[in-house]
Image 1: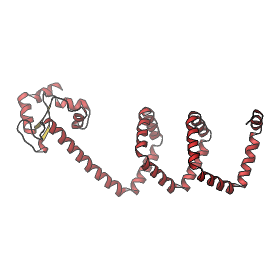
Image 2: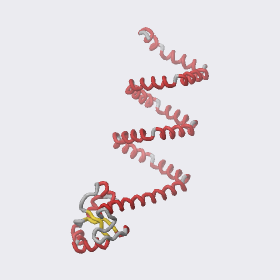
Image 3: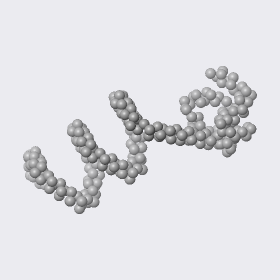
Image 4: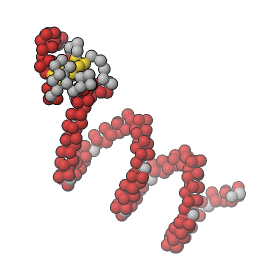
Length: 254
């Protein structure tokens, strides 16, 4: 486009836009059919060209798209809601398939995005929950009423799985501090129900309270099994406490 043509276009821009719009409305069906055929015949080339163009002008395109959305926010929101209501099943199926095809990639991107904007996301979530408190409660109640049996079944499975996980964790930690055996290091007692972790130098109550953790076994695993602990049965625990007067010391420390 020459300088003269560019200047002429700029000065008659609205006129050209109006003419194009009128022409499109008169030949809409024909235009759509022609465009669809052309796209199908040149799809790979168009996608490759679009990708290259976007990469070369990424910042500019993102800035333009963001500004356009802000200027037409309500209009775009209405269009999207209308389109979604008309094509809900198709869009859900497409989104589901896309997620399955790009699961690992999306998971990695999501984690990276969250880490770089962690505080911002938390703050936005907190603000949204405060502003839509009743709406969220209502939706949760409605969802629960519709999916009541399903949710109860899932909760039951989750609880059973959680209990099993805690049991396996307890066995793992007790075995490590039992010198490789799931037994008391003093007497060799092996009933899991009576085994627990003992602080060799005492002060276990204060230590657990200072951690502010619900599961001490999990903390030991996360700390890579630190020294200073052993596996004892409850009988040996009480004998040790009485012998070393740990209970008295603990009360005095409080």
